[in-house]
Image (cartoon, rainbow, N blue to C red; front, top):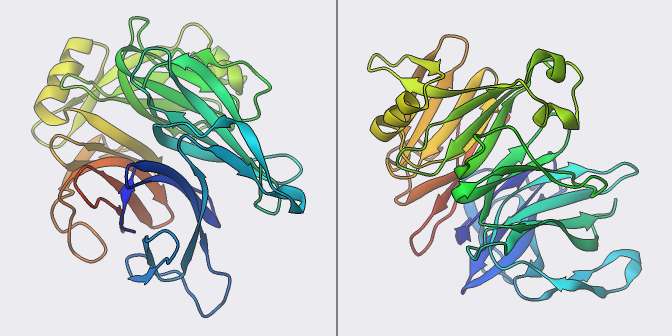
Length: 348
């Protein structure tokens, strides 16, 4: 669709995300139309939503759920009331989590730059898709950006400033957020997280840093901690942290020398942003080089594609910087950051 996209969260039957419209941040959800005639066709931008002005692919519909600076309307039980909190002003990446007993929760970062004014917020839906609650899940943090889902159904929120940390957040709010072991204690300008969960007893976490010297991290929990699974995987002692190093012959390795990782980032993938894992491959982007990197974790090889060239389904690219990356099925979704009319794009 057209419009400034700041994040993308995808589930099987619907999507949710924030868009910027005339300077206002709006929370919207997208649903595939349930009529058999209206098949979802990614890239067929033939539907103009009258209420929002968004240009949609055929087979999608959209509704506005919230607006920055305004209370969130609760629409469950056939009546309307409003949240005590106003919807956060700088929403960034988020994720959707199913809830026991039906319904789901959408977690969304708040990327406010003023120290201690960021956080993570939760929009809670009932089983009918109606909003029933809006609450803060993480507070007193700064420039909460990117992050990602864990295999044990929690959210990681990353702070994007020079002393930023990565926090684990419980979507239900039953556990207090905690700083993870995913990064060095001194912090950094962290962006997004992906997880290779093929081996459930030894998950591997990958973390991007939005910096010219932002080495891509790989974190492996200690085996004695990893085999227990769950929340404590990201807080136990003894884990291993290393860094991505590219070689000119399109192979790569992981080094425990952060200086080598930073040099490789500077030369090859500065200002890394979104990241995702699927089918043995790691996908991430550099906003500075406008590049998509695809790492084969089995063969330790990589390939690159430029997002401003013909990598999309329609054979084109997009002009401004790539931001978030989400893989679903046979498609890779990419959001665009910057310019007057950025959008959400897909490729095979």
